[in-house]
Image (cartoon, rainbow, N blue to C red; front, side, top):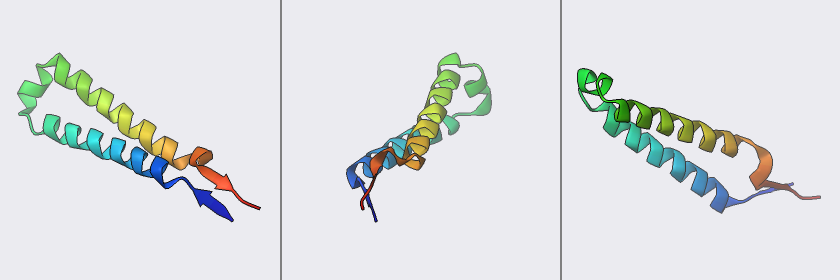
Length: 68
C-alpha cells in the first residue's frame, strides 16, 4: 500500500498551472513583438523550465510513502 502527500501534489500542480498561465500571456503577444523582446523570450524559457521541473517532481516518488 502507498500513501501520497496530497499537499505536495497540489503544490506541484499549482506551480505548473501558474507557469502555464504566464506562458499563455506571453504567447498572446504578437509574434514580431515577441521575437524582438529578449525579456519575453527569456521569461518563456523560464516558465517552460518551471513546468518541466514541477511535472518531473510530480512523476518522481519523493512524495509517495510506501506502507507495509
